[in-house]
Length: 226
Image (cartoon, rainbow, N blue to C red; front, side, top):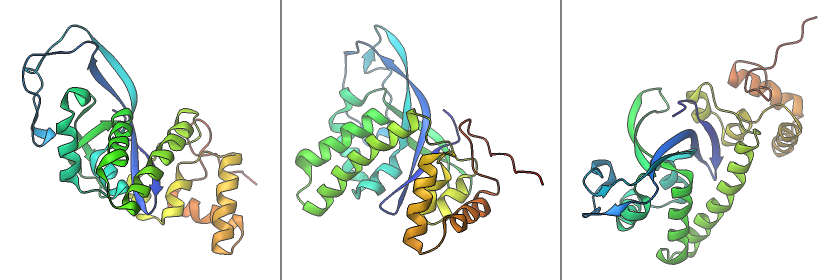
């Protein structure tokens, strides 16, 4: 797993995206119960016999970020995972992930495809509150758009996660954007919202990041010399 995440903001909640890979069974054959509570205590070694494995390379979302973004309590989402243990087997694991202070904490890391499936299950039948259901559906749409930007190289990993978590929500999204038209449009939108000039937003971004804007390769652009 790449320890540097792409950090984006969804309705005031920071969501981290990590580049990760999962060892997944192509044709798992169930030989025992997979129902566990919670998943962090699960051991699937005795639940399946492996026919063929493959390395599934994708992006992943931490379990706490997912729950906070969709506005759903952790226990209910854990119950949902346990209820579909056969489906979600191998698509999540425990990782030591840095928190806002840089301390590594044990956290469930879920493949993006698993997060999509969970959000779909929540929005289809399990949410009676219309406001919460609308939030989950909006999250589904937002994730599709965000992953499209990540896979096209429009969003880059964050070098200092503490800065991404502590800065204002609008600037969390800007910090991961590489230099180009997408960043220029996003900066103009924030400047219009704040009633200031784009150059002011760029200067604030530079102070937050401690470097110039990042280029397409994910490294800070060199400062012009006079």
